[in-house]
Amino acid sequence: MLHLLYILAFTILAFIAVANLIRNLMMFSFDTDRTYSRSSIQQGNSAYMSSSRKQFIPHPELLDSSGNLIKEPLLVMRSVNVEDARQQLDALYESSPGQKSEKEEG
Image (cartoon, rainbow, N blue to C red):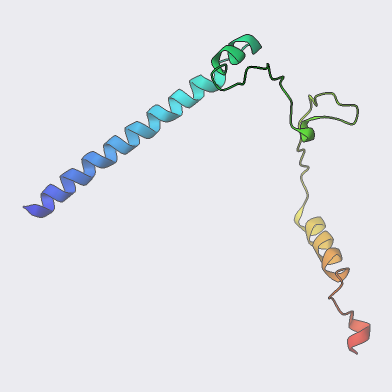
């Protein structure tokens, strides 16, 4: 009888956890779709800001050499086949400072 009680309790807890996960994912997706204007952000954060108005300062990695915001993706990956990747890794391994060449070993 006690086993059935444990199974029932953990089943209820599992359903609550899954429902909470789904609810949080839905709320997160709704929150990312929302756009915020600069004035609403400043009004919402006014309690956290000091008396002097702070200006939005982007992270330095988001700026180009002239100081403008970058509008393009920061990471672009190209597809590489297995042989090219293996050759590049072998070249890195062979050029490493601790690697002895086969001519030196012989």
